[in-house]
Length: 229
Image (cartoon, rainbow, N blue to C red; front, side, top):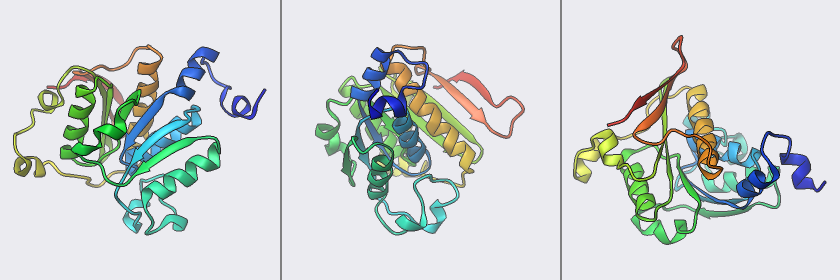
């Protein structure tokens, strides 16, 4: 058995399914609270082709919830931490890093098997969802705030309809952005997003918008499903 097999094949996936995970291109936009845990889960599942976006650097306020935030990476770009973490787990990984994400990023994302949302503002989520829909790439929505979170996969259903968004940049600004989050909520949202992405690629059941997975780690019944929009 090769090194890859020794590291990543102890799971319930078939060889064909594992090969699918290994060969698929995953795009992660945002490497903060949810995005860092998305990255970690995909790495541990044996993903080897990643495209990541984040323009930010690590600061002390990130340490309570962001898996990539360490003293070694304080005040350094989050994409640098992502590469270092990925290579420490799997030196054979192919990871393409980009600091700026915008409506002009379509050429970079084109060809990805799936895109995962680790952003912390509605405007970026809207841009990413529209871009993915136009390219017919599944878009995994992921959000966490306080002790709560939502995860869903968008294919044809419109993100704007799901969240009844207003028109215009000024109105969207009111929806921004990252508020206080407890680490288990960010971790759980990122973990669910990664698992939903793999479920889509392997043709397993997943929460397809307008259906969504909701959770609140401080409720007696932590998980429930509901409809968006």
